[in-house]
Each structure stands twice: as structure tokens, then as C-alpha cells.
Amino acid sequence: MRTLIEGYLKLNGREYVLVDRSLWTKIEEAIEDLALYEALLESVQERPAGENYAAEVLKELEENEAAYKRNKAELEAKYPGQFAVFCKGKLVAVGPNRKEALLQALRSNPGARPYVRKIGEEIPEIPEGRP
Image 1 (cartoon, rainbow, N blue to C red):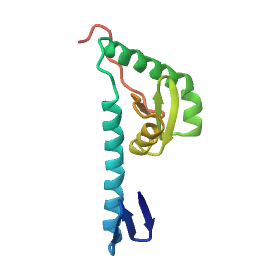
Image 2: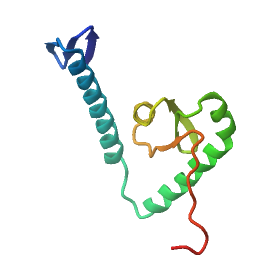
Image 3: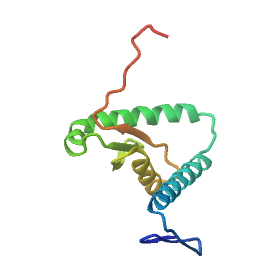
Image 4: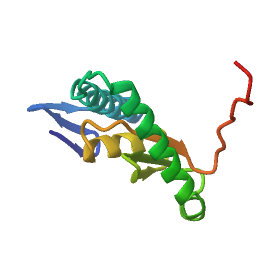
């Protein structure tokens, strides 16, 4: 468990006092990165490696893309430039940056295959017939 009180950190039963605020910021970022890594690792470990896994992943990707397109106008109006995360065809998180949105989604949907889009940003498509 992590507790923050102006430069004081209590992490996993140990206490730390930090004097330099820029050092504190770096530690906060590292803790967030670690939490994201742990959530992603947990998500990957829970996935079954079945015979139809690739087909399931592609189907879910298409569902998530379709869900983004259905909600695109509303998302652009409410959350321009932020990041939206979809799992199983449903919007599960919106955040100001990719990391925060993804972490929020994985915490509420462990084992999910998240689809992250920057709201309003178009993804270029490969023209027909081009390899």
C-alpha cells in the first residue's frame, strides 16, 4: 500500500522521507509504470492459449473498433484529445494520457484485451491491393 503526505512515502510497510521534489516526481512515475506493468502482466497470464485465440482476438478488435466509431462523436465532444479504452466492445475508461487510461481499464477489467484510441486521431488505412 502506498501513502503520500508531502514528500513522505510509506510503501509495503517501509517508510521513506524524500527531500528533493523532482526525485519524488520520478518515484511517483516509476510506481505508476510498475503498476501498469503488473496489470499488463496479470492480464497476459490470465489469457488461455486456445486453438481459436487469434480469431477471438481479431473478433474483439473489430468489436472495439466498431464501438469506438459508434461513440466517436460523443467522445470527441466530451473528451477531445484524451484516450479511450474499450474492452469487449464497451467503453471502460477515458483518461488524459494513454498510461492512465490503460491502467484504469486494466484495474477494472483484469484479464481484458484493451483497445486504446486517442480520441479524434485518425488511424491511416492501407489501400486495397497494397501489401
